[in-house]
Image 1 (cartoon, rainbow, N blue to C red):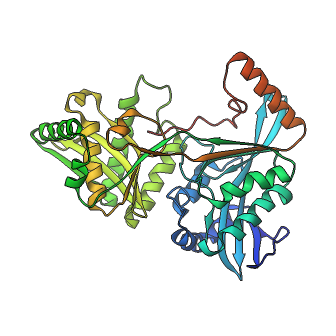
Image 2: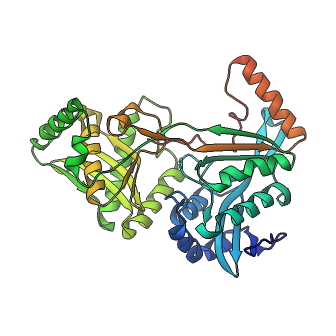
Image 3: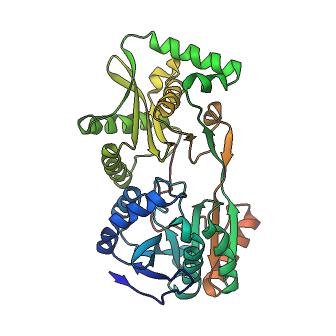
Length: 394
């Protein structure tokens, strides 16, 4: 269903509408794909496949709210959101929370925000921020994460919300390790420290001397189903006893990523790599290639083969594959793990924005924050959840 809530007029004649159901979501497909191709700030997490499949698997019990900007019927901006109700203080009160599609389930995105046509991004972001602050009345708390610091929406929204009377909190999120890729593998190797370069070469030689040793990329639909199941098994072997809830633990997580891989494979965006010994995968990496960016998402290996350093060896192959595939950036994504800095050292940080509508919900969150601070526990809002498990990523 599409409705027109108080269209915003400006020099560029931008108007806003909202999509509130799955049928309307589906009708956006062609415009969405065209806009993500034109938007310099788009990411695989804002892509049609990630967003639509996430809603399919995690949208139950949530109210869809996609803000769509148009100029002369052309879609020039999309801000994918939803509203859900959280119970606080043991169910004593409820808070309606405005969140981004992709956040709130047990699979974690990295780079969200809005898809924007570059020539109109300032006008579109101003209209979207005004709509969220002044016209969208259904939320008590706005909780947005993973916003690029460079986005005009990230810069505009806090000021607009404060002007509208909301209490606003902005935060810098955990570092994301990444690195630029040179034109060839040898140039990358030369950029490593001597010790790291020699260690990586020694581990690779040792692996390649094993019977039936090879690295393989999944390239066909026939290979995908067994490869997916092996990835799940290897990830859970890797994290068994290390965490109570490893990735791929819920039907939603497995269903979402199975369908996402099926969608990305024919587009040439899936990168599913396996390190094999005599036909058996002992380590796997699940990644996505998007706009010359190699996005490492998940992995696993069999601890029985830890003496072969399968994680380190396969990551080296992944970097080599990324370079050969024309990627310019290797993005390690969320999760500040030391092993990532063995391969790349640069870091970026996204931004989080929280806003509270003045009233009982805001007062309750303030009281909860004070209680948490006095007890040395986590900050306000960390314990509310709509019966969803915590997000997990490699």
